[in-house]
Amino acid sequence: MPGGRPRAFDADIALDRALEVFWRQGYEGTSLSDLTAAMGVNRPSLYAAFGNKEELFAKALDRYVSGPGAFAAEALIAPTIREVVRRLVEGAVELTTGAGGPGCLSVNSVHACGPDSATAREAAIACRRAAETALRRRFEQAPDLPPGCDPAVLARLVHTVTDGIAVQAASGRTRKELRQVADLALRTVLAELTDIPEPA
Image (cartoon, rainbow, N blue to C red; front, side):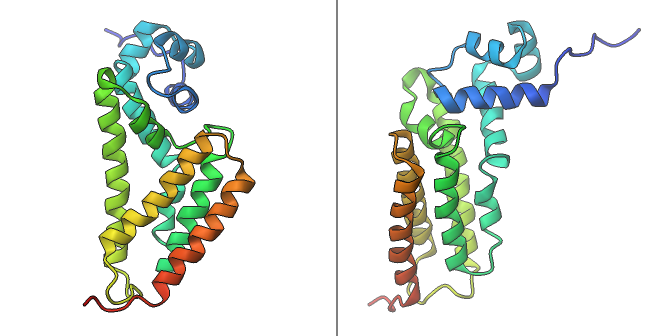
């Protein structure tokens, strides 16, 4: 017996379109009708290929991390801590002020999801924790980490800066404005990295 009828749509393209909708409208602001219209599929096809809305969001979040947000993982291979931090902060400005959002999908989802969307919110939180853990491990392995600098605190600091950039972008700040903020934040953070004293 032949197998089931092949899909009449490209799943990768459909997932990219779902990502665009979630990124632009947020999880709670996106309806199934919005998704099916953007993806060019009907609801049975959406469920068959991607699961329910929460499962589709989780897949879109993974797509975001490996696609538009890939700069974060790429920054970790920079040769120095200073360069890692610079690439992360500057990359956050470029990503969150682009045409896709604005803002950061994972940051927006953490703040904009209510109790009825707890699963989606937890997926976004897990995504963010994984990114911070990866950054902390990169700092822990760095030979140029100054004495007395706590890798976990430094990772948290960098993520606080990039989160702030994302929130400001979602509030309508321009790329020029956020580049000015990023420049000041980088000067402050990198100055601290130059000479951190031993803990008392």
